[in-house]
Image: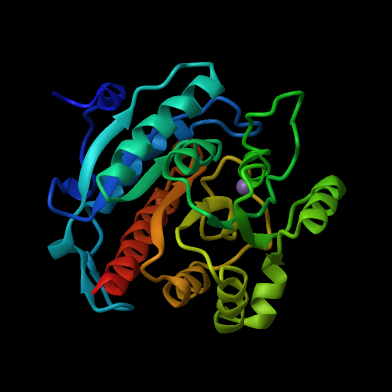
Length: 293
Ligand SMILES: [Mn+2]
């Protein structure tokens, strides 16, 4: 009998056209777009990113891995409620837990950043690495606890160990909270001064003893000159090569999943942000696959 958790899935176009059940990688679209405060449209990102992936090379020079051989198993999109964020987090968690039980590595394409509250609930990592311009550590935003500005706060409440990279847009309350419970963050400016090797060392030290690591890529961590089509653009961001270098240095067998969130295709008329999002998915998957060999 089919697992009832799969009832929340509906079929979609495939990531770069891949449909390879034997692949260790599941691709899951999560087009949730309810709490975006500035530039909505992330509900369209899963299909745009899947489409853009079709037109880039699958061979990763960084890792020597041909993702064309490894492939992806794209299982479609989650059926979401149009206004109930908490119900959606429950559904996202339910579907994610199914693929965790199958021993797969879950690649989720958002949607707004709030989806990460659901994927991490379902996958239950003990450590989370977040690339983001924002700390997302607000207790609530506009009176609401399940919001894209509160993502890492909700995750931190499960005693998950967190590390944030690319920080440059924060509130005093968030910095106080991060310091009080010990969430290290490296600003985009510090990343530039330190370089990928030193940054990755700090992450690995903080994640010592972790068994299951999850990575979330908020595309607004990247400078708007490279990634203009995001819900909340923030100047002075990271460059894509630096992010991928850091990922390549920290990736090992402990990675159980990652997501790419906050792309807003209506604000990405050139398509450059969706191409970059699909490139990040390909390169990160290649790094993870290499660590499994
Ligand atoms: Mn953000």
